Length: 123
Image (cartoon, rainbow, N blue to C red; front, top):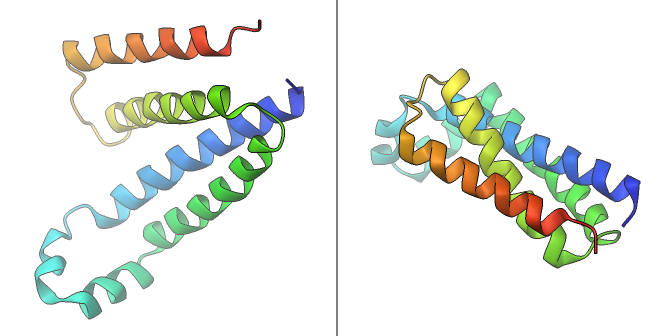
């Protein structure tokens, strides 16, 4: 497995987590817009810089992850991508969005970290 593949995977994970946090920041407190119809939602999304940043980061994630799949095994890349993203989003949610970190979430995070370690061990 190539070093370049691992660096691309790290970039994809960071972009994906950043996209999710940006989307949350942009849409926080805007749940009522969903009741106003599709046009209102599209306008809110298109004019919110945090949401636009989130879309851009999702695009970057797509490009980087496509490059990852050309270099790493899917059975390794996918669990690390999803698990690593979950861990980063949990950390960002707690530190940036002041979401609670419960014992259950902590144990889940440790389980995911152990799983990522097991999957990424070289054979």
